[in-house]
Image (cartoon, rainbow, N blue to C red; front, side, top):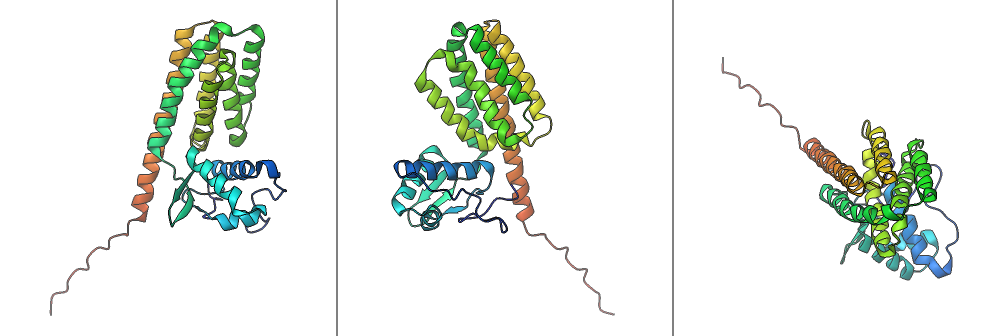
Length: 256
């Protein structure tokens, strides 16, 4: 997070912009802008609380203000940005409560999805789940691991054939990715996560619906609680560091 910027435009001081300069397709201008800003927030390039100024974003993408406003409205609806009247848009802050709630909701939805999917899995779909599980296990890059993790989880639920449920889960995966990256920096997390994935896949292979549901709930609720504690402790530490240090009173001298 040390490379995060406090505003827009995004420059690293040496190599120019940290967002792509490529021409934006007219038919999907607002979507492309939203995707680029979302990626910068997830990766930590745009820091929590950083202003998202419409004029600077419009200049960066060489577009009018209209698609920028649409992109910011989309990011606000997804929880990535906050828009206040007379103050403009800013990157949404990291929230311990939000992180925990995201994983609580995921645990409920993914428990439902895995229960629906297990009876419909085939040898081919299970082989694909196993392949994605191994890909995630072998991925050392936290940024890429988040995508591998999402692909593995979604492969477990794909046979259910519930597009609306899948869309809700995918949205929560995106919302939780910036928090997941925090957890990836904690000691031993990846190894524990990989082991839990293997156990979950084993339950799916055995058509153990109750066992798989219990595992996915424990896996996700555990992540949410860990993130809640981690963010809460970090906020408390930052608040303590910001407090002015009190000076000891000087000893009074007695007149001689």
